[in-house]
Image (cartoon, rainbow, N blue to C red; front, top):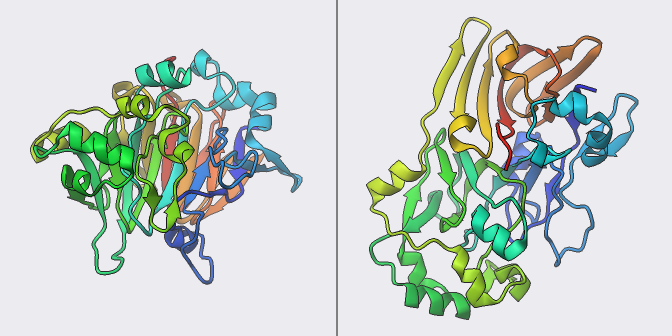
Length: 358
């Protein structure tokens, strides 16, 4: 197998959202609920002790005979054809990254994910959780325009932050962070350790290292109370707060640190291919946008595993006798050994694994 089509894979989170994900898949009555994320090509199980659904988050593959199989089991059998000989050995039989669609109806908690050094020290994991957001759109909720909180500004005071984090009420800390209005098309890199929070009304595709580690000290997320496990990841609270980097940035410094510059790689009558995240620079993952006008054949220079999301239109992907048909909202994967030919008219995001080992 070189071409895979995934079933919908919505995941429970502590915040509400997801109406825009319903709209993407043309659900008749879109609504926000507790499943605001769609995990794509995932071999990662969600850390949801409050929800209690073993294996939640792992993608399911629709097989040619109509049966369904977890993606991690498919990779056990088909790793050579899907991941290819140049896949980082340290990733094993996994993609080496995780990608999601995320739609927030409320502000998420102030949080940080561990960088690799902290992750090894605190969670005994080779992966941290550097992530990137591709801004797909937004919606006004309760009169509030969509926004992101990112980085500490010049009002940052660590003792105030620490006191509020331990108490779970972080009103002053909100004012210590840059409030950044989103623009569709922006690509934003959030390094491990970087303080952030997605605001209400934000629709993004996330690409990240393949973990679910998070330190989010606030005691509530909207109406949802957070346990100490939710807030501090099972760590001593003081130790958990060491995950947060304390760098103070001006707004210009923030933009320079996080904003990525898309680069058009090829353009003709058949398709336009744009690099959104250069995996040779970022190291942890990569991202491409394919605007399919008519036909596109993947060049040999891109013979790597790809996880795809169809944002607009319809397409057919063929490789020899294998064919998958795609429409808006569908998610899929193309193996490293495939020679895929895309036909149709569509806008597709393609997430890529890291180039080198951890």
